[in-house]
Image (cartoon, rainbow, N blue to C red; front, side, top):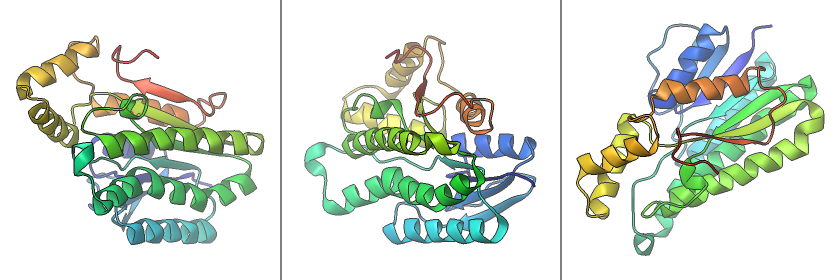
Amino acid sequence: MTPVAVVTGASRGIGLATLRRLVSAGYDCVAIGLHAPDVDGRVAFLRHDLADPRGAQAAAAAVTELAAGSGPVSLLVNNAGGADPVAAAELDHARVERDVTLNLTAPMLLCAAVLPGMCAAGEGAVVNVASTAGRRGVRYLPTYSAAKAGLIAYTQSVADEHASSGVRANCVCPGAVATALATAGRAELSRRNGLDPGAYEAAMAARTGLGRLLDADEVAEVVVWLGTGVGRAVNGQTINVCGTASMD
């Protein structure tokens, strides 16, 4: 049976790079998000806004139906995420709900949708894309940092609960990646910190130890390694993909 992978936020950046690697590895893929990915291969697209509580619930229901109809999902990659920079004092309920739903609630609901089938099959993997901001909170990213920290703890909980069933759950924490979404966020962070955008980007690049920002495919490589069986002995772990920017 051809393995099935579900990838969220797969239209660009890390998600798209991950999707392309999985297609090349022979997976039938389901991409969930707002925009259909530009990729050749056996990819089905489900349009759901994972930042909307109703959209997150609908996506989870669709994955549950998928698993019931065509068999268990072999791999779930919760990649969709993000949040606009904001001061903690500027937060309101709507922004908190949207940011937490996208970065934490939706991944938890999608995990709940695939776990029964994985457990019944005796194998499966969940890879949650968190952030180094979830390891150490970042100024002007309060909801994002908090939600990603919660995603890390949730992943550890799932791994501990399901280790004996053959199901693994791990986190990948990217640092400064050269994607359009991340670049826009860093531009706003530099403005709020009173810094020149070019100098801010250069400082982030220097922190990686590589003299540059990371490429999305470098993160996707780790995601796929964790999710496709090569890393069977790795479970409940949080792996930074950020060069030398964070070594804790």
